Length: 294
Length: 268
Image (cartoon, rainbow over all chains, first blue to last red; front, top):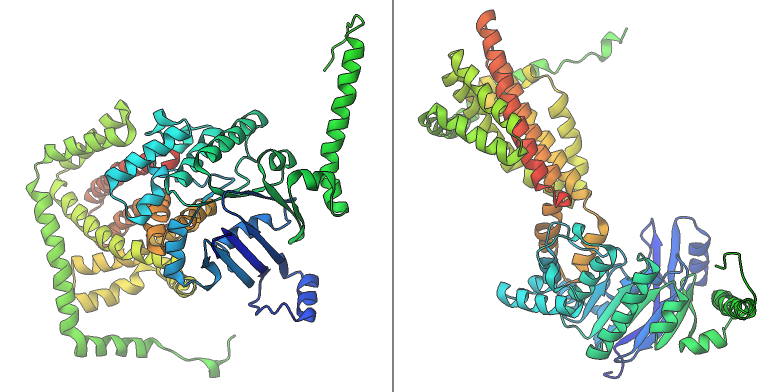
């Protein structure tokens, strides 16, 4: 089992107002869940695996179940059916205590809304995971300082998160995930809230960090650019199902269905438009232009 | 008119119940009563032993920490001098001892109960109507049985104050905990926080402004209740005493609210 970092088999997650005992073999039940307004099938029969050192992207529109999927990996939401195995440990079979140990030592997560503690300084935030583990204060401060150096925030130790910009807050979020030194990094749309320039910068930063640390990264995004830039492999989700898995270039070149095609179409359109504009610019530059060209 | 046949009075049974309590468990109430009285007198002893100018200095320092403005510091420090001028300094200290004792007991019960309300939904559903009853019931309804059970004097005043002042701190503690942003809690859980760690490291600190607002409210209500509990007779004296209570109220309110604001994590 050592070859895969993440193994997910037949994973289902149903949100329901009533308590239900899901049985995926029971087609009538699934149908009634789908048609009922009291329940939502957020993740539907998802199976995939992630290899060590891989950057695995999950892409989909909002509501496609990708955020639920990443939460299933740490059991931040209750899993309705199926199994999740991470680093050879079956997460779905753990009791409360084992789950706490697992979360402390096996995986670290970065959130879209940062999830920083507003009443703690940057340094205390970064060392939070170590504190939960019971690491002595002196050691955790040292390690947190090192992690802050990696993300380029070494001078911001004693500031509170409110004093930081969005990009800097997410750097703190990344430092917090690095400091616990887990083999697996889970990232839930970490750069979606940032403006395009900063987003780009953060992506480069992540690439650099990945070159240095060779983590396994499970990365959720709705941004195709981001998926293409960062991903070794990607899965496209729709209505809780994975509709295609492959290398980003493969998905881009050979979409499995209409939905994926529409996803990549904008990107193709963009490329085509850019080509046209470039051609037009080249043509114009040979004339005298008085209008604004934007 | 409501049909005569359905009329049923519980007044007698309540009287009987109180009498029965007095007869069978009188000594338990007495020892409880003397315990509270002991605490009260201990607090009062400490308060009386402090010279008056030390209070003024203490208020000035606290006002400075709370507001960081010079005018409120002067106003808040000068106001208590009037209490002394009216010749009510000693009585004011007795009142203050009553308030401090009630508030300390109220917080010692109220904050853990508020946490329990936020953690256990069924408990909250059960306790909310009880809190409603505590807040709406006219104080005389429980003052008289309290006097019967605990004797005349200060102890029933503490009990009545507790009944009246406990609900706000419980409610505000619970509310504060419920309002802690979900993403922050989720992040703590993802890094392996246990339920207790989540409470201690994340939820209680983030609920602190609301909890402190509860402390403030409880203190104010305790002050208000103390007045009802220790009736004022002479009109002229009553006026002076009323002013004194208001002065104490203003000073305590301004300082605790200022401190609560200083504690707010979002202002850092």
